[in-house]
Image 1 (cartoon, helix red, strand yellow):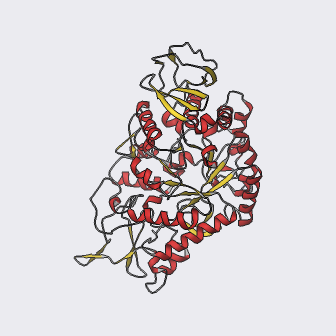
Image 2 (cartoon, rainbow, N blue to C red; image 1 turned 120 degrees about the vertical axis):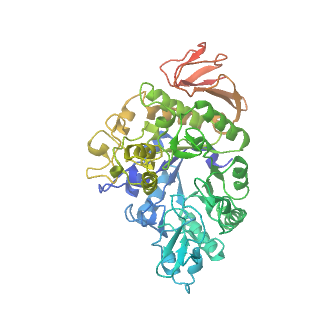
Length: 541
C-alpha cells in the first residue's frame, strides 16, 4: 500500500492558521511553529491551501506566478524551511494546484490581450455576438460565482472566459503549450520536495465546445466543461509524463462528479477524488447551499455507504475551506456539542479511505455569528448576497440565506488561546475571529482531558496503530435508521463502530458486540438497548 493509505491529512488555510509576524494574517513561519502541534495530534500529511503568488481577489485561488511565494505568507526560503522541518517530523506536504485559471494579473494574461502575442491562445478569447448593433457575450454560459462567464476587454474588443470571477480567466487547454507549462510547474514543486497536489476544480479544465447551453438554475454551460473526454486525456498525459514518474499523490476537487465518473478519474489520472455528494445532498435543495433544508442523518448515511461500497478508496472529509463547520451542520452547538463533535470524528476516522481534517475541526470550531455583510471577506459570498438582493429578497432574508453558504465560517483565524484575538495576533486580524474563542481554543482543548482535541488525538493514534482501521475491509450492519454501524476487518483483527448520527436517543436492533475501547460519553454499557444523542463507540471483537 502507498503512504497516503495510512496517513491522516490536515488541511491548512495559511492566512488563518498562525500569524508569526503579527501582521494580522497567517504565514509560513507560523505553520512551521505549529508543526509539533500537528505531530502531537497524529497528522502524517498536510494539504496546504495556496501559498503561491496571487492578486488575492479569491484568497490565493487566482495565481499570478506559479513558481513564487505570496509575500504575505513569506519567501521561497520560508517554504523550503517548511519542507525541511516537516520532513524531520515525517509529515508530507501536498500543495494546492490551481490550473483551470490564473489571475488576471498573471504575466501570461496581461500579454495575451495582444492578439499577436504567443500568449493570446493561452486563454479563451472570443469575438462578441452582435445583436442589433450591441456587443454581447459569445454564449449564454454562467460563471459559478454568478453572472455571465464572459468579460469584455476594452483593450482588444474581445471577450475572455472566466468560469469563476472575472479576475480568474480560464486557461485554454486546447493549446498544447498550456499543458507543457503545467508540466513545468508540477516538476518545479516536485523537485523541491512536495509530495503531490490537491487539484482545484480539475474536472473543469477542458472545454469541448463554446456553443449556447441548456439554461439551468446554476452552471449553465456545464455540459461543455464538466468531466469532458479532453480533461481525461490531459490528466492521463500529466500523470504519464510527470506525476507517475515522481510517484506524486494527487487528489482532485471534481465538481458534481458522479460515482461512476469518479472511478474514471482514478484510472491512470488522479490518485483520489473528493466526493461532494454528502455535502450537496443532505441539507440543501437542488444542490444550492443557500436553499437550506433540514438535515436528516439517514441521507448522510445512505450516501456514505454508497461511496464506501462502490469506490475502492476515497478521501474522507466533513470540512474544508469552502464548507461551513460540520458541528453546526451535522451536530449540535448546544447541549450535545462535545458528543456530536466526537461522533463526527469517529465516523470520519474509522471509515475506509484517507481522512482529511480541516484546521479547527479538531477543537470543535463552530460557525461564526456574522452580524452583517460588512464582516464578510469572501467574494463568492458577496456575489450571492448581491444576487439575492437583485432578486428582491429583503436584506434580512438575503443575509440569512447567504449565511447558509458563507465560506468565511471556515476561514476565521484559529484561536490558539483565550487572549486578545485568540492569540492569533494582537493587531486587527484579516477576518474576525469566531465569537466563541474564549471557550473554544487550542490551549483549553490541550488542557482538558475530555476535550475534542484529545478525543481526536486518541482516535488518530488508534487508527495509526491498527491496520484494520486503515486498510481493513468494511462491512455494514443495520442497527437503525439513523445509526451508522460497520465492521472493519483485517486478518484476525475486527473492530465494530457504531454511531448515532442524530440528536435523539435511538433504540438499536441488537446489542453492540465486543469490548468497548473508545466512546464519546463518560461510559458505555455494551448491553444498553438505546444509544444516546450523537453517541458513538468503537469496540474490539
